[in-house]
Length: 511
Image 1 (cartoon, rainbow, N blue to C red):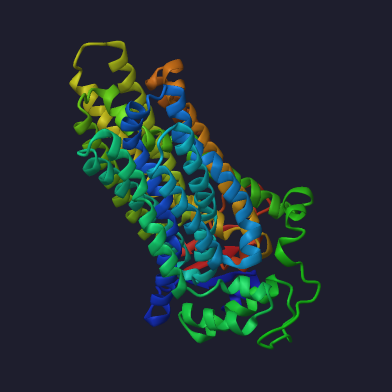
Image 2 (tube, rainbow, N blue to C red):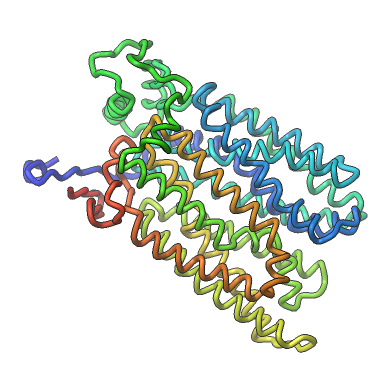
């Protein structure tokens, strides 16, 4: 920090790219933790195609099908709500193992289901695992990653969700060649395979250094930080920052310590979050809930879950064409999530969110308009409207994947203070899954009530409101240390209290 910077109260954070064995170790940890997200992505993707065959085989009504499609996200609220307390109790790593175990059992139950109640039991068990996985993967990754690559590494859960979705779509296409009563069972049952690899891979992961510090295991925490930081000096600095955030005096340097006034297992966190939050924590909570709400209420799961239905309404008649087009959606979504992940630390969270939500608004408006035109001209082949519908479905998932998809998890996993992070992030995930479940369970009815074009125009309105919220409420967090994050919030204005300026390799926080 320069002397002139000290006089102006400027904090400079170096943004150097990760290097050497340490960065590769952090990369490997993020990969292993993020594999939990494959299980959610696979379930979302596979159900979009499996539903076509389940409905025919089990003779389901549209209402039963809607409930089956969206209920997993409602069930996941149980896992999301318990994940914060569980991860504070048994640690981040074993919470990942627990998530995999739930989904493994759920996938097998769904694969062997013989009737509607049986498959709903499988959805319930798998949903709990999904709730655990959605909360713990980004939190663990954010706590292991150094600040210079935190955005990149924390985006991995969203990448693996999309890989899972794509695998689900591909599974639909190949298993659709089997007899109807077998195809959908293989589609769902094979989802147990990623859970097995997850349980094996997690054995190579270290525990979160921030959780270790909260448990008083300072020596173990430093070992992890030394392996995941670019230099030993950075590891020492990160450890000191975590100790200060946890209220541990600097002179307590033993490998194992008894924390003064220790609040174990998340006790008191809910009061600090919901009953008596500071202005900064209240702002953080509003930002987290708002971004999670916007991500789902803008209709992404309507597109991902019901792509075959949308393409049918757009004019693609054969199941084979619908499934192929759906695979194309998965490919586009996965490619663009990689783009978003690679640029999140270059352009920042705020810029990507605004660009993404703006693109989603344009895509949804065009999709809703083209589907309305097709709906108003039954029996006619309007090529430009069909082409526009297919194109805007692709552009919608592309713009979502650049920003709203990955940045939601990055942003919400890094903004909470360390003691509030696990349970604060779990609140965001609970709202995310609730909105996803509501969209999944009501889309067919909504499309009947408003027409399918009207439903997407409604989603476009949500995207427009979300853009205004992001512009007004969300400060930039790129390159800011987790322990300094709280200082960015409290003014309810993205630019009023803190103006984060990125110049080359510096982040300057002017207060």
